[in-house]
Image (tube, rainbow, N blue to C red; front, side, top):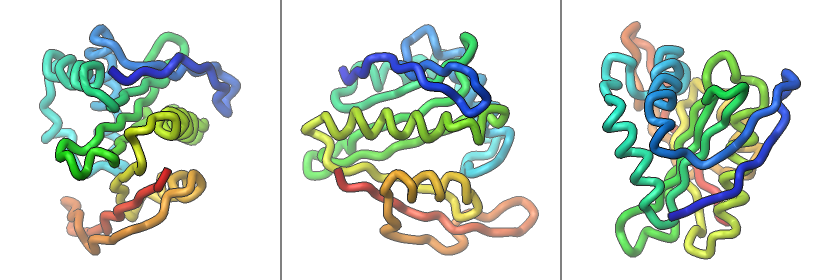
Length: 183
């Protein structure tokens, strides 16, 4: 089981945020957080209608990180509420296990407060100390400039673009950008 000690950081709004590993009992609140992020429809491929996970499925998802070697699921908690999360899971295939994929989300009311950067930096700190992790990969939508700036700031580089990969209900498109960071 991958683990990192809790860390307290200051948000730009002056609030204190604890970054800690997720636990089984976080499932319902983490699911609510994910639904709120999906409803904001910024940077997500999955629509709110497609996101049909229940609490037990969310609990199983969390357990996958708790039981999986070299997998990590961190939460950002402010005033006792989950305001964001970041996950890292290594590839399953033996020849790809030195790398993994991250996913991240921050509640709309907490975006722009440095929570995403704090989560990403904490995950990268953990990854750099883990001899099994050599690179981190992610996908980001081209219409999410805030996320792109963060990833560039933290050293990620683009390794591919799928033009017009995502089509919205109004007929507009955006690219899907693949990025990576070699540790």
